[in-house]
Amino acid sequence: MCSSDLAIGDGVVAADDTGGTTAWGEIRDPQGAAHPYDQGCAASIASAVTTFSTAERVEPGGAQASSVHDTRRLRLFSGTSNPELAREIGAYLGIPDGPRVIKRFADGELYIQIQESIRGCDVFLIQPTCAPVNDHLMELLIMVDACRRASARQITAVVPYYGYARADRKTAGRESITAKLVANLLVKSGVDRVLAMDLHSSQIQGYFDIPCDHIYGSPVLVDYLRSRSLGEVVVVSPDVGGVARARAFAKQMNDAPLAIIDKRRSGHNVAESLTVIGDVSGKTAILIDDMIDTGGTICAGARLLRERGATRVLACATHAVFSPPAVERLSAPGLFEEVIVTNSIPLSDEIGRAHV
Image (cartoon, one colour):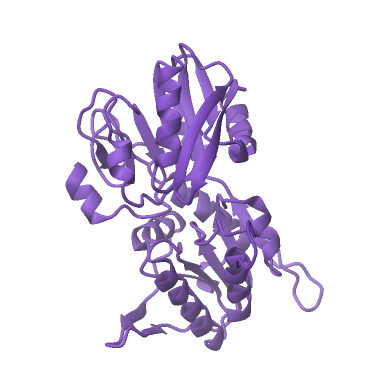
């Protein structure tokens, strides 16, 4: 994660409430030391990986195998979507990112080769399917197939950001439920287990015919917020659909009060905020969502909260999708004091050069 009023490294975004420069970087304290929550996303995923790999197994004779993890059987491989996150997870576990070749032919086709033996190993493939979604999804499927044909014992797809998660139901006739289609593709490709973080809809777990583990980025965000002097806090859901998420977040924030922004959406990526349900006057409002895409929803909500008397407005989200013009919207002066995200999706170099 990162914050605008702290020194710059690499990982989160924040907009300065005074209209100053937006900073993109990892969390560091004013003396320059790395903030303890900097690798929260990696630590959460690594802890889940450790849980899977240390599960007690039963030997063929019926004797229970040792629960002590054997790192010789564990392999981590990353795609090209977020190699830095994979390196952080590997560093947390003490296991390097495995050697592989990923290249693209002149006609756009992908070639992937695993460059070490993985026979009988538990393989974890780390690949958020962020933009370009189709390329990264296809890359993950090819990696899975390569590992399956190399006789891996078990293949776990670690998908911190699950692309197409918002296409989780039909809202009109003759539409595809693409989130279910992606689940089918992963299962058919040979994945044995899926590990995802902050799915847009929890029911996506049920789209898989294999185990799907769903972890959350909120503990990392809560730990960071607790380290700040925020005064009286109110947790705000930017829409009715996020009330359950905001309620759970508010409970972690020492049972902070909850407010809801009632809005109507007139089209894709277009949101219109109408009113605030709850009292935000004189309080620090924390807008919580699973992702920030174009920023329309969360920025419109922030303006409304300012109009209703909120003294400070912070935004928290797990996934920094940041489709244009999100950066410009989030950087608007007098809107957000901080925008806090995890590194489940890498921030582009263009964003870093423009805002550091």
